[in-house]
Image (cartoon, rainbow, N blue to C red; front, side, top):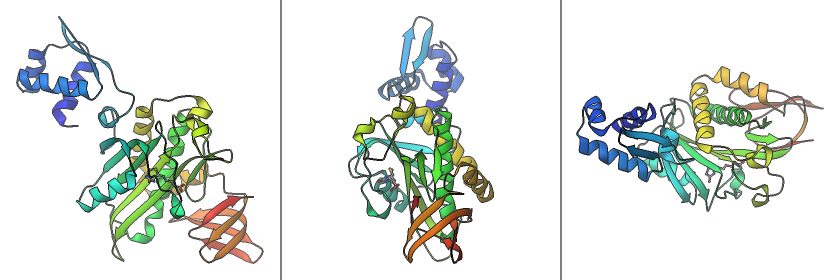
Length: 303
Ligand code: BTN
């Protein structure tokens, strides 16, 4: 959203203001104010126009401008009602040089999960991908996924959902999956060019529309205002993304995996034992009969 449009919204939120007053305050023409008001109405903002001036009456439940309005984190939000996959859209933006852009969708028709699985993404969810250009070597990228898992968990808890993290990056309620993260990246050996964490959160979705073993925020606590949920999530992610130690501490505090017996299918075979800790950039330490094994990637099952 451009700065003038944001200023128009801020002014309208404070009470009725006439077009000429607003034009003077913002240093633009009355015609420009009228155009901004019309554009905001098209975006779903309800703006009353009375004798005493314009006033903001309601903000849309979801969408790019709705999320950007009041967002205290430096992201632009590109919204789509329906796309095959927000990660695919985000990759194209990254290839064109974008940074700190969030691709957000109400529905995905070809959502993808880890290990090339399908990711069911009906309308009502929060499906989003963040284009980032961090100054990081590829080996440290997993910490971004951990930060995203913490951010989802905190936003879900704020909505009243009893969410916890399962290594490496699933957000669960009990043993039912609420959210998952698929992180993609491109770069050289010593520095990434871009990283895209793709976050899928079953928000205002009926659990019957989801695969077995999944849950949604709606099923747990009822329908939420997704605009506010996404704002909290992005703000938390922004706080954490440059502080790997804080990410790790926060991740440990929210993890349901630590202290549990686990079975992890890794590319090098199965590791079974007690999950005792996680260390940067996201390595799971499993105490097995043969000693502590460090697991960098894999599919983890709580036993
Ligand atoms: C997992 O397998 O747990 C990861 C699921 C990641 C799904 C999200 S939804 C937004 C983004 N777009 C996709 O196609 N996938 C990710």
